[in-house]
Image (cartoon, helix red, strand yellow):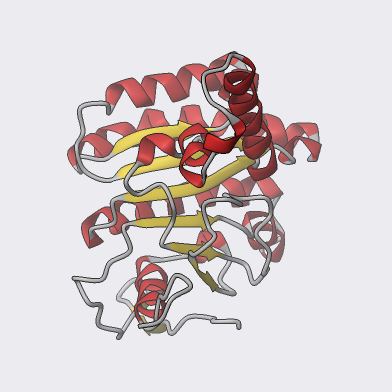
Length: 263
């Protein structure tokens, strides 16, 4: 079922639209782990007759705003789908720009992350990224490692199917080494081999949001979202605001989460 968001606007003194939410959130029911498929950067740029990379740059600014908003709301893990294992199929100029984005992003945003006590984590096949991207990622992780607040978790060169294949390979190696028998393999075994294992006890998202109106999972956290609440909004990612985030969480709070049982 599509949910397009209940976002209102008013004119500010600068003549721009300021988006407001009139939904009141239950502070005791904030999702611990929010995951977002950030979609629509290219379409945002095309609507303005701009190159696609302009949309990615504006999307980077949205990441900064939503990170701080989520942290203030009390979200514990914010996972953002930044680059998939399939995104290498895009034009080389666009891929090159996206690979340089982490450098630009962290160079300007790490001080704010530290100020708001936000720790950076990155999951994915990082070793396959260009050296300069790997360096930017490792520096951001090191610079924020002492922060104890929200975790800003980027999925970078990440794919859900590839993650599961890697996990199965690790388990198979343990079986081959007689460290575990096939009968001993449980869902917890698989959980422990996934890239989200270090996010415990919040490995699985409570809420998954996708922007731009598309209603697909796109190979994102396939194991972890088994019981996540899904919210789809028509807003393109560069237009996603604090109000939109609050309204997505409000929609989440109206759901009755039963996890296969009855309440």
